[in-house]
Image (tube, rainbow, N blue to C red; front, top):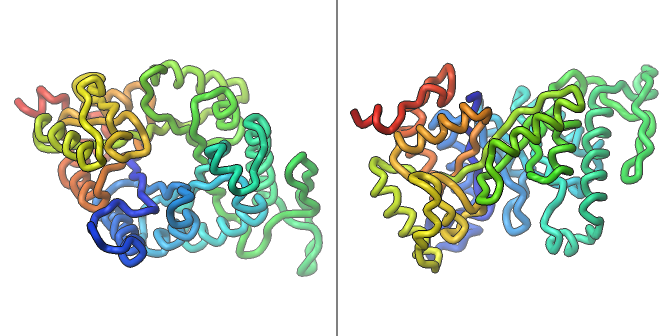
Length: 347
């Protein structure tokens, strides 16, 4: 497995009860970034959250505060023109020596999108996302027409959503690595978008669709375009010294969120479908001892997952916990592929 990333929260995670979030949330967020770098994870995802801090601003602060972390900002194509997004990204790549990445949210929540005047149908949103990525890559790799005594060919584009004439970068904005592009989703439109433009496709655990089947669908879509696409899996975790301790923690988080634990949410010995009830964004994640969780991560790697994107709550404490107790079970040269099975770790 090539990477272990951490998904941050841009709206705080209630670490200081009774304290106004505006006074502490951003400092806590940067502390979580520092914790991620110290813990030895490979990168952080800064999610797009209408109720939280702006992902691009947080990503810039995170890149400035770190030396090694890959920082990925999630956004949707209404952020701005793809030319502007590319230019901002070129500057962030210069700042960070190539550590900035994108997660393009092709289809945001429909109700939230309407509050911003985005009334496109689902299929049209995916077409817009494809144009956004095509234009961004086009200007990134082209020399513009005119200016400073140079005459480049320029990038020309006349699409349904974006139009560019003589675009391109030169000087300090040229020659930089294009951001690594992540795209998430399980439907055919999301897979097709990744197959054409994505570097990494992001899945989550689901009750109704085995991961193996979705990986086959992604590989088939990518092969049809003559490309290969990396695979990431977002999975929240609650890991402790023993399985019992981890499950007690899961029950406590659920009650703190105002719900009651449901035994039916225990899908197997390690997968739990109660994370959303406990206040997380994803429904299904991993609960268990460090060795139990490491074993399941090994199974993901064997199935073809290149990167896992973990998250926990509260973030700073859980990042340190993962760094101190979980990552050392992995082989640094082969990421999770040699994580011991539970019975081996307890022998």
